[in-house]
Image (cartoon, rainbow, N blue to C red; front, top):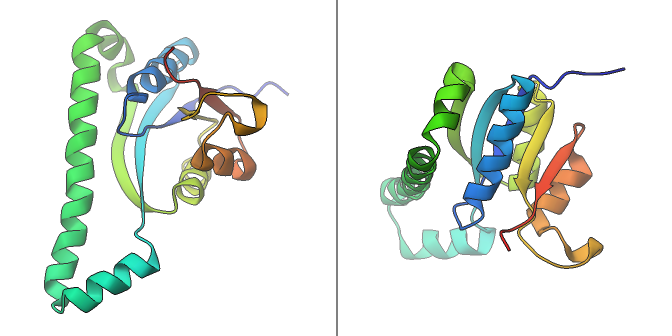
Amino acid sequence: MDQPITRILCCVGLRGDCDVVLERAVSLALACGAELQVLHAVKSLDDDVMNTLRVNIRSQEVLDKLMRQRLAQAREQLDYRMDAFWSTHPEARRALGDKLARQEVVEGYPATLITRLAAQRGCDLIVMAANKRGFAASYAGKVTRGVIKRATVPVVVVPPPA
């Protein structure tokens, strides 16, 4: 009945809670000898926002370029956050070695994307931020609650720094 943890999906935001989530995911990966995948999910723009953009930006080429730039900026921010994290945790980076499998940005509804990618990639554990402080029902943010509801694997919810 014991299922080993071989792949961990670490979902990070690009705010202050990023480091504590990464610390927890890296320590779990090292303790289990697991592969670590780091993911940032960018929420798709609402239909109302997209319709407003289409009305005001007539060129589909320009609109497509703006959407690509939006994701490129998120990738740059994730790269910056990861570089900053590894610069303060060089020993963990060395210890993890080639077990850091990927680092990526995806777009869509975050909770759905996270759970779908975890299942597709055979992840045994999802690590993510609580995003809120408080009592049981309101402790997790909307995305975290959505992941907990949909996940078929355990989800470690990391509280924000004190």
